Amino acid sequence: MSEALCKNCHNTLPEKAAYCPVCGQSTRTITRPWLEAFRELIAEVFDLDGRMMNSLRLLLTRPGLLSYEYIHGRRVSHTSPLRMYLIISLGFFLLLPFMTPIPVERSASHEFSPETYSKAMFVLLPLFALFLKGLYRNFYYLAHLVFSMYLFSAIYIGFSLMLLLESWSDRYLAALGLQVLVFILLVIYTVKSLRTAYSDSWVKAALKFLVLLGVFLPIIAVALDLASHLSSFRL
Image (cartoon, rainbow, N blue to C red; front, side):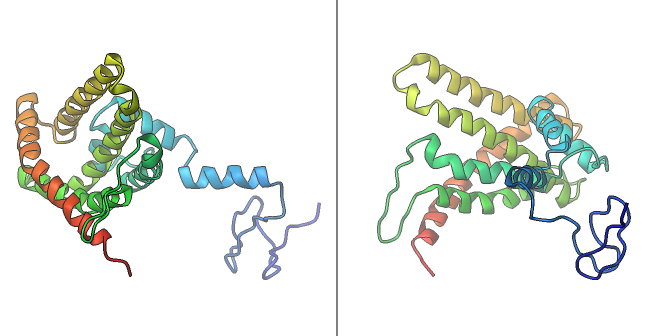
């Protein structure tokens, strides 16, 4: 059997090497069936090696556990919070116009669209982490940022379910009931996440959730208004 050579520097490649140890050239080739290349691309983007699916399962069924594990250094078997947030938020905002007919209001100074909401959330996530720092001073800000990314990822999934039911909620009472149920579950999910990630009691976690809600709801309105103003300026 002939030895594999790097196509760039012609150095002999170790068996099953992904990159040349001399020049760093990838050993992969694009001259192969498109379906094989597409599967590899999807696997790399979405981390489909078991970690992503397992992390997604834990995100939905064990509120706050991913944050707790990451904060305490057990990270190898889980998808990183940044990767999780980017994938889910990207999917949410890309699919947002198709999940529900969001009205777009345009004027000289306002524009409301999915782009507006994505800009607002870009500001709100680190701000939410800052408020958590005020409630849990014994943790570093990075820990709160990790918690916020995982929490917002779960909230995006919950909002997606609520938005998918929006077109039926005006006609069917069951659809409206399911929306209310998802909202209640999101509230419980957030409280349980705080309790698990920060080792808090149910009472303290619930009280801190109410504080966050009372402070954060007005800020959401301000952020959306600010994002709508910024959207009216085109470079």
